[in-house]
Amino acid sequence: MKFNFGWLTNNLGLKLISLLLAIGFWYYAVGEESIEVTLMVPLEIRLPSPKLRVSKSSAEGIKITLQSPRQLVPQLSAAKISATHEVAGVEKTGDYSFNLSARDFSIPYPEVRVTKIFPSFVTISIDELITKKLLIDPDLVGDPAIGYRVDAVAIELDPNAILVEGPKTILEKLDKIKTEPIQLVGRVRSFRRSVRVANPPEIRILGEGVSDVQIPIIAEFADQEMKGLAVKPLGSPAPERYAILVEDKVITIIKGPKPLLEKLNPKDILVYVNIEGLKEGYYEIPVTVLLPTDLSLKGDPPTVLVRIRKIE
Image 1: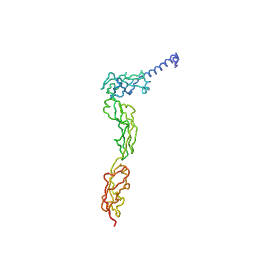
Image 2: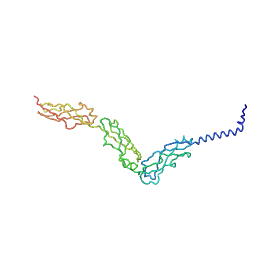
Image 3: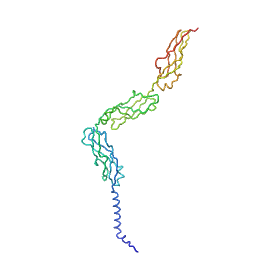
Image 4: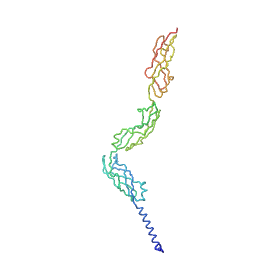
């Protein structure tokens, strides 16, 4: 059997053009095929008056479904798609609601259409924008070294207050505004630090928002009882007389910074009684206590009984 393939070669040029057109139409159809893409878009709400502010919104972001040609899908994720709704006719504070539509969305490609919006119904609270002066409150974090503390009364701030702008319902509840955290861990000395004022949500700081803070660190004071401190006589009694300490040890209470008290040794304390010029007899005399710097005696000094006798 013989096959005739002549039909393949008849009108070959026309057949090739038809094939190329078919392939072109197929690529065009594939390129024009539409698919759905879902994105999250931030919502911006514009108010008619600069004295008004949105203090609360039921939706910060909007989920939209887009119908897009296939070839544009890779560009959509990087495209600047935004949602902006203008609230008109509002002159006072309160709660307001509105519906979002495709007109509220800015899409850089005309071929892309918005098909679904969620949520499409949004409720907002509109508040009056006011200016208020707030005291600056240093945010102290952690504790100084053991035996030390912050002298809160002596903290200095320059400036100690700042002007802020924000919704009236929020600022009416505030008297102070925190700084950024100031670390105290392990501190044993006072220090100065320039810190920024923390910026709470919905509040705008007017000015530089920086304060120079002086934090005084002081040692904690305590008492410590010292027993068995030896008393030494100082001076000489009257001629041909000598002294006998009936009591030669005393108990004292020392006060001062905790770290110093913890290191205090009885050898660091000098206790003496002045017997200069005393005549024969018994004397109850307060002792003198010499202590290291920054330590002091609590209460009255103890007394010792001294006997002065004539030399036989």
